[in-house]
Amino acid sequence: MAECTTTKIIAKFLVVASGENSANNIPVIPGLDTFMGEALHSSRYKSGKSFFGKSVLVIGSGNSGMEIAYDLATHGANTSIVIRSPIHVMTKEVIRLGMTLAHHLPLNLVDNLVVMATKFIFGDLSRHGIIMPKMGPMILKSKTGRSTVIDVGTIGLIKTGIIQVSISWDIT
Image (cartoon, rainbow, N blue to C red; front, top):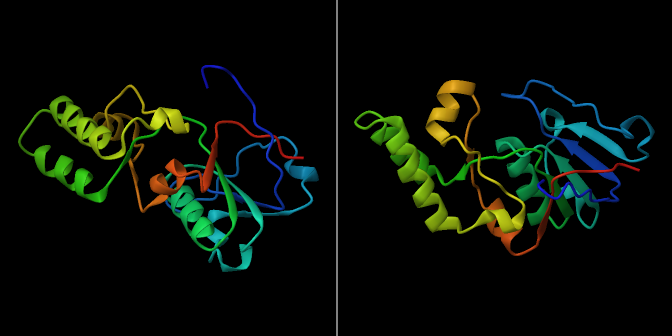
């Protein structure tokens, strides 16, 4: 994002995974009206089986988008995901730890601990296109309602290059 680079991804299928709790929220996507492939919202997504060997772009890096990208990649789709803004990604164990500690410690201290644990588990994700927000995950949730992404294995596939990350897109 700092370099303002644009990546052109050619795909026959587009999955839009934006909105919270299955609420359809399809952002304004330049070129979507002339996109020749299939475009569907994550609420209509069923399985990656039918996308084997096909190129698919997932727009949205919340829990739904990350889970769909994982499912597509593990079913043999050539998968790319657009991460448009900074996100916290954690294991369910780290989130559980943070929620337990939040009952006993100040949120800023809990945030520091869970971010440190996440960096220990995943390493520096910025080199893979995943930037953490400046605000910690617990305070971010309490102030904005934005949830932490629970990793289901997507990060491992991103780190090995099986899933490509883009911070921008051009649909043509």
